[in-house]
Image 1 (spheres, rainbow, N blue to C red):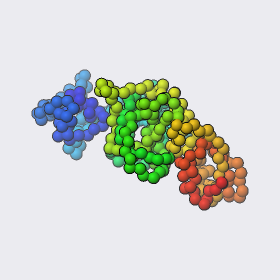
Image 2: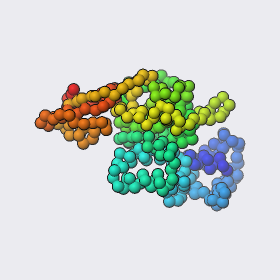
Image 3: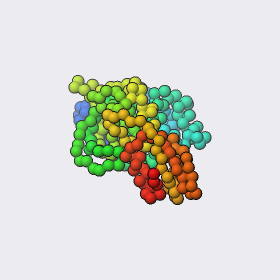
Image 4: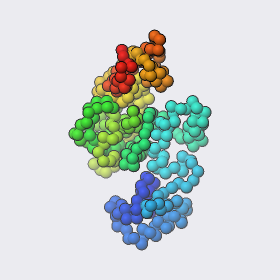
Length: 318
Protein backbone atom coordinates (compact mmCIF):
# COMPACT_ATOMS: atom_id res chain seq x y z
CA UNK A 1 0.00 0.00 0.00
CA UNK A 2 2.92 2.35 0.55
CA UNK A 3 3.70 2.31 -3.17
CA UNK A 4 0.11 3.33 -3.94
CA UNK A 5 0.35 6.27 -1.53
CA UNK A 6 3.80 7.34 -2.79
CA UNK A 7 2.53 7.27 -6.39
CA UNK A 8 -0.53 9.37 -5.60
CA UNK A 9 1.45 11.81 -3.42
CA UNK A 10 3.51 12.78 -6.46
CA UNK A 11 0.32 14.14 -8.02
CA UNK A 12 -0.35 11.22 -10.35
CA UNK A 13 -4.03 10.72 -11.17
CA UNK A 14 -4.28 7.18 -12.55
CA UNK A 15 -7.29 5.17 -13.62
CA UNK A 16 -7.78 1.84 -11.87
CA UNK A 17 -6.13 -0.04 -14.76
CA UNK A 18 -3.19 2.40 -14.86
CA UNK A 19 -2.65 2.04 -11.12
CA UNK A 20 -2.73 -1.75 -11.40
CA UNK A 21 -0.27 -1.61 -14.31
CA UNK A 22 2.09 0.71 -12.38
CA UNK A 23 2.20 -1.63 -9.39
CA UNK A 24 2.81 -4.65 -11.65
CA UNK A 25 5.58 -2.90 -13.61
CA UNK A 26 7.59 -1.51 -10.71
CA UNK A 27 6.74 -3.86 -7.87
CA UNK A 28 4.71 -7.07 -8.33
CA UNK A 29 1.40 -8.05 -9.99
CA UNK A 30 -1.71 -7.35 -7.95
CA UNK A 31 -5.19 -8.78 -8.43
CA UNK A 32 -8.20 -6.54 -9.04
CA UNK A 33 -9.89 -7.60 -5.81
CA UNK A 34 -6.73 -6.96 -3.75
CA UNK A 35 -6.20 -3.51 -5.26
CA UNK A 36 -9.81 -2.55 -4.55
CA UNK A 37 -9.41 -3.75 -0.97
CA UNK A 38 -6.17 -1.77 -0.55
CA UNK A 39 -7.85 1.42 -1.80
CA UNK A 40 -10.80 0.88 0.54
CA UNK A 41 -8.43 0.32 3.48
CA UNK A 42 -6.48 3.50 2.70
CA UNK A 43 -9.70 5.52 2.62
CA UNK A 44 -11.17 4.08 5.79
CA UNK A 45 -8.14 3.16 7.91
CA UNK A 46 -5.21 4.84 6.18
CA UNK A 47 -1.58 4.65 7.20
CA UNK A 48 -0.61 5.07 10.85
CA UNK A 49 -4.29 5.40 11.73
CA UNK A 50 -4.88 8.41 9.44
CA UNK A 51 -7.45 7.83 6.65
CA UNK A 52 -6.42 9.22 3.27
CA UNK A 53 -8.65 11.50 1.21
CA UNK A 54 -8.55 9.47 -2.04
CA UNK A 55 -11.29 10.59 -4.40
CA UNK A 56 -12.50 9.37 -7.77
CA UNK A 57 -12.92 12.16 -10.34
CA UNK A 58 -13.56 11.35 -13.98
CA UNK A 59 -12.70 7.68 -13.36
CA UNK A 60 -9.30 8.70 -11.98
CA UNK A 61 -7.98 8.49 -8.42
CA UNK A 62 -6.86 11.77 -6.84
CA UNK A 63 -5.22 12.17 -3.43
CA UNK A 64 -6.23 15.44 -1.78
CA UNK A 65 -4.86 16.72 1.49
CA UNK A 66 -8.40 17.64 2.55
CA UNK A 67 -7.14 20.08 5.17
CA UNK A 68 -6.69 23.79 5.64
CA UNK A 69 -3.51 25.02 3.98
CA UNK A 70 -0.40 24.20 5.98
CA UNK A 71 3.07 23.44 4.63
CA UNK A 72 3.25 20.21 6.61
CA UNK A 73 -0.05 19.05 5.09
CA UNK A 74 0.88 19.65 1.46
CA UNK A 75 1.25 16.72 -0.88
CA UNK A 76 4.71 16.23 -2.39
CA UNK A 77 3.81 17.68 -5.78
CA UNK A 78 2.26 20.70 -4.04
CA UNK A 79 5.28 21.28 -1.82
CA UNK A 80 7.80 20.94 -4.65
CA UNK A 81 6.21 23.78 -6.62
CA UNK A 82 6.06 26.31 -3.76
CA UNK A 83 9.15 28.07 -5.23
CA UNK A 84 7.02 29.11 -8.20
CA UNK A 85 4.51 30.67 -5.79
CA UNK A 86 7.34 32.72 -4.31
CA UNK A 87 8.53 33.59 -7.82
CA UNK A 88 5.12 34.96 -8.75
CA UNK A 89 4.63 36.89 -5.49
CA UNK A 90 8.06 38.35 -4.79
CA UNK A 91 7.87 41.25 -7.30
CA UNK A 92 4.85 42.46 -5.32
CA UNK A 93 6.11 41.86 -1.80
CA UNK A 94 5.87 45.57 -0.93
CA UNK A 95 2.08 45.24 -1.02
CA UNK A 96 0.98 44.51 2.58
CA UNK A 97 -1.28 41.59 1.61
CA UNK A 98 1.46 39.87 -0.43
CA UNK A 99 4.03 40.46 2.29
CA UNK A 100 1.64 38.88 4.80
CA UNK A 101 1.32 35.75 2.63
CA UNK A 102 5.09 35.38 2.26
CA UNK A 103 5.63 35.99 5.98
CA UNK A 104 2.97 33.39 6.76
CA UNK A 105 4.73 30.78 4.62
CA UNK A 106 8.13 31.52 6.13
CA UNK A 107 7.29 32.12 9.79
CA UNK A 108 3.95 30.50 10.57
CA UNK A 109 4.63 27.36 8.53
CA UNK A 110 8.22 27.15 9.76
CA UNK A 111 10.04 26.82 6.45
CA UNK A 112 13.73 26.36 7.15
CA UNK A 113 16.47 28.62 5.84
CA UNK A 114 17.46 26.44 2.91
CA UNK A 115 13.86 26.07 1.72
CA UNK A 116 13.43 29.84 1.80
CA UNK A 117 16.63 30.30 -0.23
CA UNK A 118 15.51 27.73 -2.79
CA UNK A 119 12.17 29.45 -3.11
CA UNK A 120 13.46 33.01 -3.24
CA UNK A 121 16.03 32.04 -5.88
CA UNK A 122 13.43 31.02 -8.44
CA UNK A 123 12.71 34.47 -9.87
CA UNK A 124 10.18 34.54 -12.68
CA UNK A 125 8.46 37.10 -14.90
CA UNK A 126 5.57 36.99 -17.33
CA UNK A 127 4.44 33.51 -16.34
CA UNK A 128 1.79 32.06 -18.64
CA UNK A 129 -0.49 29.00 -18.46
CA UNK A 130 1.28 25.71 -19.24
CA UNK A 131 0.03 22.27 -20.15
CA UNK A 132 -0.06 19.17 -17.96
CA UNK A 133 3.04 17.48 -19.42
CA UNK A 134 5.06 20.65 -18.93
CA UNK A 135 3.85 20.90 -15.33
CA UNK A 136 5.04 17.31 -14.79
CA UNK A 137 8.53 18.34 -15.91
CA UNK A 138 8.54 21.29 -13.53
CA UNK A 139 7.36 19.10 -10.64
CA UNK A 140 10.11 16.58 -11.42
CA UNK A 141 12.74 19.34 -11.28
CA UNK A 142 11.39 20.86 -8.08
CA UNK A 143 11.24 17.41 -6.50
CA UNK A 144 14.90 16.85 -7.39
CA UNK A 145 15.88 20.24 -5.93
CA UNK A 146 13.92 19.48 -2.77
CA UNK A 147 15.49 16.02 -2.42
CA UNK A 148 18.96 17.22 -3.56
CA UNK A 149 19.17 14.61 -6.31
CA UNK A 150 20.61 14.92 -9.81
CA UNK A 151 18.34 14.64 -12.85
CA UNK A 152 18.99 13.26 -16.30
CA UNK A 153 17.20 13.89 -19.56
CA UNK A 154 17.55 14.02 -23.34
CA UNK A 155 17.68 17.54 -24.65
CA UNK A 156 17.38 19.41 -27.95
CA UNK A 157 20.38 21.74 -27.94
CA UNK A 158 19.85 25.50 -27.99
CA UNK A 159 22.59 27.52 -29.63
CA UNK A 160 22.45 30.81 -27.75
CA UNK A 161 20.23 32.99 -25.61
CA UNK A 162 16.59 32.65 -24.68
CA UNK A 163 15.59 33.27 -28.30
CA UNK A 164 17.47 31.18 -30.82
CA UNK A 165 17.18 29.16 -33.99
CA UNK A 166 15.96 25.58 -33.70
CA UNK A 167 18.51 22.80 -33.30
CA UNK A 168 17.31 19.21 -33.64
CA UNK A 169 20.44 17.58 -32.22
CA UNK A 170 19.49 15.56 -29.13
CA UNK A 171 22.09 15.25 -26.37
CA UNK A 172 22.07 13.50 -22.99
CA UNK A 173 22.56 15.57 -19.85
CA UNK A 174 22.96 14.64 -16.18
CA UNK A 175 22.62 17.76 -14.05
CA UNK A 176 22.55 18.95 -10.44
CA UNK A 177 19.44 21.23 -10.51
CA UNK A 178 19.64 24.52 -8.63
CA UNK A 179 16.55 26.48 -9.60
CA UNK A 180 13.89 27.21 -12.20
CA UNK A 181 13.85 30.68 -13.75
CA UNK A 182 11.41 32.32 -16.15
CA UNK A 183 12.26 34.87 -18.84
CA UNK A 184 9.85 36.19 -21.45
CA UNK A 185 7.39 33.41 -20.72
CA UNK A 186 9.95 30.61 -21.13
CA UNK A 187 10.93 28.31 -18.26
CA UNK A 188 14.55 27.27 -17.65
CA UNK A 189 16.34 24.70 -15.53
CA UNK A 190 19.50 26.25 -14.08
CA UNK A 191 22.12 23.76 -12.96
CA UNK A 192 25.55 22.26 -13.40
CA UNK A 193 26.50 18.97 -15.02
CA UNK A 194 27.47 16.26 -12.56
CA UNK A 195 30.88 15.83 -14.22
CA UNK A 196 31.76 19.55 -14.06
CA UNK A 197 33.62 21.51 -11.39
CA UNK A 198 31.42 23.49 -8.98
CA UNK A 199 32.28 26.94 -10.39
CA UNK A 200 30.24 29.88 -11.60
CA UNK A 201 31.56 29.59 -15.14
CA UNK A 202 30.28 26.00 -15.37
CA UNK A 203 26.62 26.90 -14.77
CA UNK A 204 24.24 26.20 -17.66
CA UNK A 205 20.57 26.80 -18.32
CA UNK A 206 18.22 24.49 -20.23
CA UNK A 207 14.88 25.65 -21.71
CA UNK A 208 12.45 23.14 -20.25
CA UNK A 209 10.40 23.06 -23.45
CA UNK A 210 13.49 21.71 -25.27
CA UNK A 211 13.74 18.67 -23.00
CA UNK A 212 12.69 15.54 -24.86
CA UNK A 213 9.75 13.73 -23.24
CA UNK A 214 10.54 13.69 -19.53
CA UNK A 215 12.98 14.36 -16.68
CA UNK A 216 14.11 11.51 -14.42
CA UNK A 217 15.98 11.32 -11.13
CA UNK A 218 19.55 10.21 -11.88
CA UNK A 219 21.08 7.01 -10.49
CA UNK A 220 24.64 5.71 -10.40
CA UNK A 221 25.82 2.28 -11.60
CA UNK A 222 24.70 0.77 -8.28
CA UNK A 223 21.17 2.13 -8.73
CA UNK A 224 21.65 4.69 -5.94
CA UNK A 225 20.36 8.27 -6.41
CA UNK A 226 23.14 10.72 -7.32
CA UNK A 227 23.00 13.16 -4.41
CA UNK A 228 24.36 16.67 -3.88
CA UNK A 229 24.24 19.35 -1.20
CA UNK A 230 22.13 22.18 -2.59
CA UNK A 231 23.32 24.81 -0.10
CA UNK A 232 27.02 24.04 -0.61
CA UNK A 233 26.70 23.99 -4.39
CA UNK A 234 24.69 27.23 -4.42
CA UNK A 235 27.46 28.88 -2.38
CA UNK A 236 30.25 27.47 -4.58
CA UNK A 237 28.72 28.92 -7.76
CA UNK A 238 27.52 32.15 -6.07
CA UNK A 239 23.94 31.41 -7.10
CA UNK A 240 22.57 34.44 -5.27
CA UNK A 241 24.48 36.80 -7.58
CA UNK A 242 24.53 34.62 -10.69
CA UNK A 243 22.00 36.70 -12.65
CA UNK A 244 22.38 39.93 -10.68
CA UNK A 245 23.83 41.89 -13.60
CA UNK A 246 22.00 40.15 -16.42
CA UNK A 247 18.76 40.53 -18.30
CA UNK A 248 17.56 37.16 -19.47
CA UNK A 249 19.26 33.80 -19.28
CA UNK A 250 22.22 33.92 -21.64
CA UNK A 251 25.62 32.95 -20.26
CA UNK A 252 28.70 32.44 -22.41
CA UNK A 253 29.54 28.97 -21.12
CA UNK A 254 33.02 28.69 -19.60
CA UNK A 255 33.83 32.39 -19.89
CA UNK A 256 33.85 35.12 -17.27
CA UNK A 257 32.06 38.40 -17.94
CA UNK A 258 31.97 41.69 -16.06
CA UNK A 259 29.15 44.25 -16.01
CA UNK A 260 29.54 47.56 -17.82
CA UNK A 261 27.51 50.73 -18.24
CA UNK A 262 25.01 50.40 -21.09
CA UNK A 263 23.12 53.43 -22.44
CA UNK A 264 20.00 53.70 -24.60
CA UNK A 265 17.63 56.46 -25.70
CA UNK A 266 13.86 55.91 -25.70
CA UNK A 267 10.99 57.97 -27.06
CA UNK A 268 7.21 57.94 -27.17
CA UNK A 269 5.44 54.86 -25.86
CA UNK A 270 8.78 53.06 -25.35
CA UNK A 271 9.99 55.78 -22.97
CA UNK A 272 6.75 55.60 -20.98
CA UNK A 273 6.92 51.81 -20.85
CA UNK A 274 10.54 51.57 -19.68
CA UNK A 275 10.01 54.25 -17.02
CA UNK A 276 6.96 52.37 -15.73
CA UNK A 277 8.49 48.89 -16.01
CA UNK A 278 12.29 49.09 -15.52
CA UNK A 279 14.35 46.61 -17.53
CA UNK A 280 16.68 45.98 -14.57
CA UNK A 281 17.05 47.11 -10.96
CA UNK A 282 20.17 49.16 -11.86
CA UNK A 283 18.17 51.36 -14.25
CA UNK A 284 18.48 55.14 -13.89
CA UNK A 285 17.60 58.12 -16.06
CA UNK A 286 20.69 60.17 -16.97
CA UNK A 287 19.29 62.64 -19.51
CA UNK A 288 15.98 64.01 -20.77
CA UNK A 289 15.25 65.89 -23.98
CA UNK A 290 11.58 66.76 -24.29
CA UNK A 291 9.77 63.43 -24.28
CA UNK A 292 12.95 61.47 -24.99
CA UNK A 293 14.92 59.87 -22.16
CA UNK A 294 18.42 58.44 -21.97
CA UNK A 295 18.74 55.52 -19.55
CA UNK A 296 21.68 53.52 -18.30
CA UNK A 297 22.12 50.15 -16.62
CA UNK A 298 25.07 48.28 -15.12
CA UNK A 299 24.78 45.02 -17.04
CA UNK A 300 26.64 42.28 -18.84
CA UNK A 301 25.90 42.58 -22.57
CA UNK A 302 24.10 39.48 -23.86
CA UNK A 303 21.95 38.48 -26.86
CA UNK A 304 18.93 38.41 -24.54
CA UNK A 305 19.53 42.06 -23.62
CA UNK A 306 19.84 43.02 -27.29
CA UNK A 307 16.61 41.20 -28.08
CA UNK A 308 14.93 43.16 -25.29
CA UNK A 309 16.01 46.43 -26.90
CA UNK A 310 14.95 45.24 -30.37
CA UNK A 311 11.36 44.85 -29.17
CA UNK A 312 11.13 48.64 -29.01
CA UNK A 313 12.10 49.01 -32.68
CA UNK A 314 12.83 52.55 -33.86
CA UNK A 315 11.69 53.92 -30.50
CA UNK A 316 15.01 52.77 -28.95
CA UNK A 317 18.55 53.71 -30.07
CA UNK A 318 22.11 54.16 -28.75
